[in-house]
Amino acid sequence: MQERLSQKVSVSIVFVAAMFMSIMDITIVNVALPTIGRDFAVRPTAVDSISVAFLVSLAVFIPASGWLGDRFGGKRVLLAAIAVFTGASALCGVASSLGELDAFRILQGVGGGMLVPVGMAMLYRAFPPEERIRAATILTVPTTLAPALGPVLGGLLVTELSWRWVFYVNVPIGVAAFVFGAVFLRHGVERHPGRFDLAGFLLSGVGLGLLMYGVSEGPDLGWATPTVFGTIATGTVLLVAMVVVELRATEPIVALRLLGNRLFRSCSGVMILTMSAFLGTLYVVSLYFQDGRGLSPLASGLSTFPEAIGVMLGAQLASRVVYPILGPRRHITIGLVGAATAIGLLSLLGAHSSLWYARGLLFAMGFTIAQMFVPTQAASFATISPAATGRASTMFNAVRQLGGAIGVALLTTAIVLVGATHHVAGHTVANLGAYRITFLVAAALCVAGIWPALAIHDAEAAHTIPVRIPRRATETDARTAVPVADLA
Image (cartoon, rainbow, N blue to C red; front, side, top):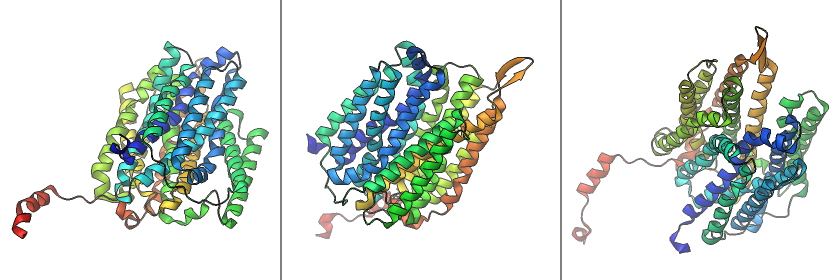
């Protein structure tokens, strides 16, 4: 039975389930934070630690994932990560205090930090370069559907059941992915990554963790507060030290030399800017619907969901039609222009704008952002050797994670600076002008992504572009083909 299922299918199923679970966890938990705060009788701002604990732990353990996957094999590490994440999710659901919940979220981050890089490396090793566009389409499903589905499912679970179910929902997904993977995944060839680079791990993990903490807390606590400024400054210093140490190391845990690869560097630049715009927009549009328009969390999630539908349709068009015709450079550029336009038009939303107009723009954003995600992920690893895929996946996902955090922090800061509320006729009302400005900032981030996109050379990713054979030519070949018997 195991032989009947190819590794392409097996890895795809396990990885999509694991990645979906990990990414959705961030947005689904955000919906439940106010309820958790009331249940544990803590001040509203205190529950922010639930999200920050997960993001910081995630950042700390991402750098080690590539080395672990190469040393112990992708299957072992991926299944271990799924087990840790699933078990921690169950523990989060039974937490009896905020301190316990924070501790279990840190454990979740340990599993989540290994899930995505190891699974992505396995996926790209299963698919040869000429089929990477299919792998990129697969990756688009959890990357873009999960953030949009999280608020819908989270609002439904919190309203109808309990906040604890935003964690319990991971358990059946995790168990199913673990069992399926244990049965159908093959043990890959264990590579020889050398000795564990402890100095690189500590500098990169702690540095990235501190930076993520500062970026996440900056909008709420204030960028000039000693805690935020100190953690960002310390994290930056540690990351600079990490660069110096890793460039001198013979077997670095963070393969910075991969940034010397022009195609990988350009795609990483596109990814960090676009993830900042994409996740930042999803976060702000949720605030617009709830705080600006007074919608419930569930209604807000349902109004955001058209973005996911747009991504699904856009990804199919991107992989089947557009990428084979245009190649990555023009495809990514067109996608960024389209996404910037859709996000920019969101800035025209007012207090009484049609919700269907907003939903239509979100659908357009999803459709056009897929024209960036699919070709970027298809081309990123085109010139990366199989031996370096694990380390490249680690770096690519660290960039993606940091980009999302920066986007949310940057756009939230814009709202705070402009003012989320203002006084009108003696009443405090939502200041929709703040949301308009943040949408323009997000659109500018998409425009900025065009610069690294134009540095991409299609020739370097040529073997990832499927060859399109005209249907008429295929039919002609079939009619003029000489039977084998005649050749004999």
